[in-house]
Image 1 (cartoon, one colour):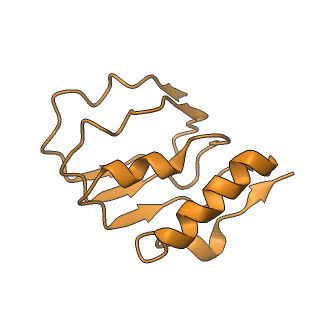
Image 2 (tube, rainbow, N blue to C red):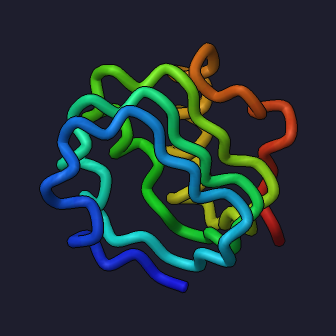
Length: 103
């Protein structure tokens, strides 16, 4: 399953989005940008590998994010940015202790 980026247009008032356990393998960059009022985003339990989670910083009201139980990349360049985002957003990522990468 992939999100191409157009699925959330015209949903700028959406506050909660539950996408956990949907076998999502890829999410296009900028997919969540139209969701300007998004507060809760659950992406846990999917098959995500390279989604640039640091793009979520563009959602100013986002206060709860779930990212665990995915297949996050351990590639050095990606992992460095991913870890930096986790550190900067630790108070938002409710399952941070369970987030890991797959070798």
